[in-house]
Length: 143
Image (cartoon, rainbow, N blue to C red):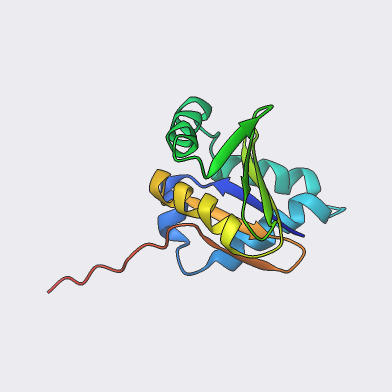
């Protein structure tokens, strides 16, 4: 099972730390597991992230539910594929949580929907030490 925690990063921090996502990862790890500076790390996480716009997100997912790939039950969203892979997305106040079983195709459906929502979402898989932007920023060339 793969579990992703997705943070909504404030624009100024997302722009400044683009390419240095490891700093965010270290901060989020410290906020979860640190013993000495845990409270300070939690305050820093709260400072660099912003609350999720729940109403807008739910409207965004309501359009996806209309495609019949996703279904909603008890304030959670699910994708079930033909090969019995299942993925669950839960919208919390400050983070999104995705739990995926089976193939990577089911979680990519959620990532595609979130990619259209915002470019300032950072996904973190703490178990496998993986992290990255849902929608990477394209570098602009100024001539």
